[in-house]
Length: 329
Ligand SMILES: [Zn+2]
Ligand SMILES: [Zn+2]
Image (cartoon, rainbow, N blue to C red; front, side, top):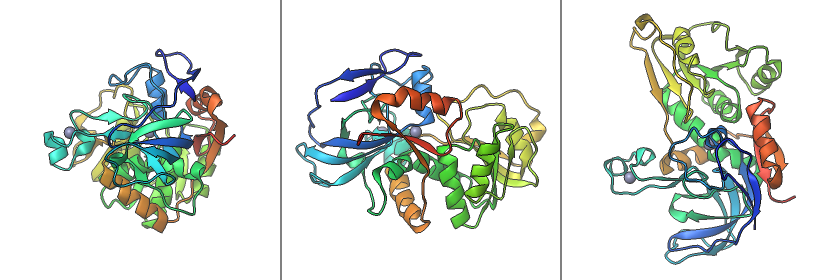
């Protein structure tokens, strides 16, 4: 099978020919149809994820069909469409797993990071951590649901019942969250790279109440802020924008250092928190909600062997929506 492999940090992925893997107990072999390209993949390539195990095939927004099932797979059959997310495995016995916080598991596996992911024609996955995907959507448009959608959903839930929500960084996750917010009758204020008129128009087109550069103050007091941009300097900026009692949610897996800021910005019972990984419950809740809210993703397809070009476009902020690798030519 063809696979795009990260062999060493800070170097391009290599196109390699690999043997098709065989599913073990509890695993399924999936013929990959589409795999989303996530900002986390950039952090992986840049050597910013200490948990990574190289060489690795990146990709954790996988849509495909089950080609074969290993022993002890009860929940899926050959031929079914399936989705594989970032959380590839959780131990089930650590204190976090037992408390319903498998996103914080002490011994997790992460798809496309500690185990091989979907930048390939085939992938192996633990079926208990996969999702059945709804009909009526193409493989390409479903792929971003599996991380941009799930992490965006988890971040939005951390924001509580905030009515006016600032979103900082308007990429794949934000373009889904803004649709969920509109469905839940919340107002989104989208902050993009300064002067990025294209991203601002994209945000307003999807239902944002306002869009502007991240260097401008919010036009009104916000109840919460979600940071998708991996820019630590946005934390004090977002704290300035939120009202008393408001939460600033950092949704990325990696962020540049947060600069020192006066305690006054945190005072008034403002909160800063992060979002780490996902639980299977997030997945089932989001997939149900996305259908109710009629979420539509905007995707920019690339062939599998153009994965490096897709990553470059993401890095340079040239995408409106989500880059997705298509294995269907
Ligand atoms: Zn665990
Ligand atoms: Zn991701």
